[in-house]
Image (cartoon, rainbow, N blue to C red; front, side):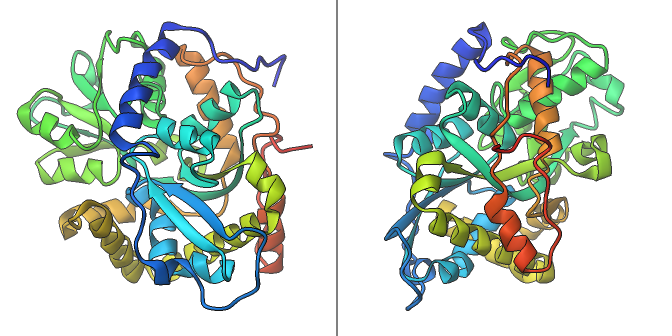
Length: 371
């Protein structure tokens, strides 16, 4: 990467993100609304060796793209690797609030998307976090009202929802629009296509009311819209080499990584074992994830939503670092980020140690690892 700069642009887009962050912290922050799992039996393994921390605080979203965390905690797979160290989980609905929690020490390890990882690392000048592993790829679709939009070219002049200004799906959609040769002001969302930032929780209602014509959305929101009559017009995975791109990775605070490397390694081992179990027992894992979602939200997903959503997600230990680097470039092109120096954002040594011991191929950091 050539002469990279390490600070976020002091732009309107950055300023606009602050009220969004405030809303996220109020609605789903690490203090008032973060939910702790009561299933102590799944969070503490009986016996086991004593690690360097009594507890490890893990954050994640109540989304299918975070199923490694949902299933790993639900089934006690992560706890099994931690011995007597207790897992204290908290859930979030937005990346900025999870990064804020990590910075405040309210969580130690988080499952999170690439854009908030990039923003958190860049804003702290490379001092807040490391990406230590992968979790999921895919699970993002462009779904539209088939009465109004029949082809990709028909999107021009229509209202398309993304979850949040500057979030992973927002950046992806803005980049796709740009590659179509259309113009959209990133901050306002106005242009040849109207980008309407809409929380995933209310996107189905917005679609039903007709206030949006479609959405570039993660699962299970995309499949919820399809249940309402929307049509999948594009699967984002088709835009990436080998149909793979990072949607969820695992981050850790640098402080916790330095002070408790044994705990970090245990969580990673639990994540690797969880992904192995998910991929070997897809139906059982899907049911487990749905049970975890029911605990967190009060209701499970119906079969016609979870079945297609689950099929579109790949669970992987590989953080797909090259795709994160590309996503950073997309954010730069959209005007949401100055060219960042991401060198050091990855520390994959603990993960590769685990993979090597398991006889699995090691994963690459795309030249962005710690030196």
